[in-house]
Length: 270
Image (tube, rainbow, N blue to C red; front, side, top):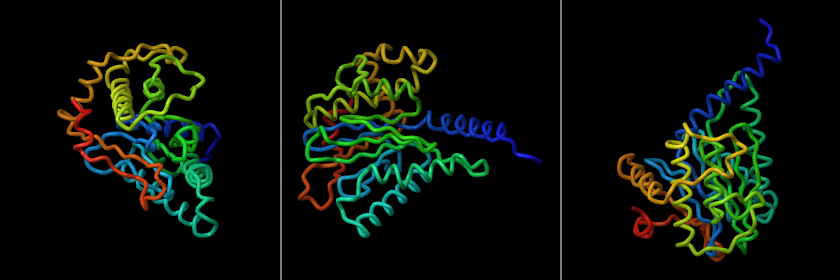
């Protein structure tokens, strides 16, 4: 039986539908720059979803736990090999995403006889100043995009757009992604929790009324009371717990990724 280009395109379309349907139920990830470092926040039930890759580099994502672990291993191995063979200064998030992870995901997705990885990842690199922090959002098909100041990864593009609007602090269309004033860690936690709740709301409550893509930047954001209810339902009814970590700027520390303890988070939770 001949395998035609049409069959290949159909296979890719079916793969994309399968992965996107699986990702829709995943917990969003929010990240933004604070004066103290880069804050990453999501929720989980059992396994961790935030990982340190190398000095100044971290990774978080949603998808199948085994696929997240495979990507984490590949990123860590590449980063440490780069640091050993070249120098620590040569290890950058651009090289990890662009030369190690993205090509592997593209090969896996394009191969009609391989199961695609169910993953959407968010890679970050902390710098000496918040304005120099780097964010990469990597998709299951190997495509990635660079962001500054903040970034979000969620199960749908609509959820990501709404989360970015919250993270920008404007709550309104922000097409140029203008630099914003650096927040304190406490302010960053409040905004990240609000962004996560907005992403979950868009996935659960707003799916049926999702507007056309050209209207996403103008779509109304849910009221704060509804966002508090979404977060409370996830924590109490869904059995989830908030996972937050700070990739610190203090380069004197041996490990820069610090997970925030529950007592530090409780003041911001319903």
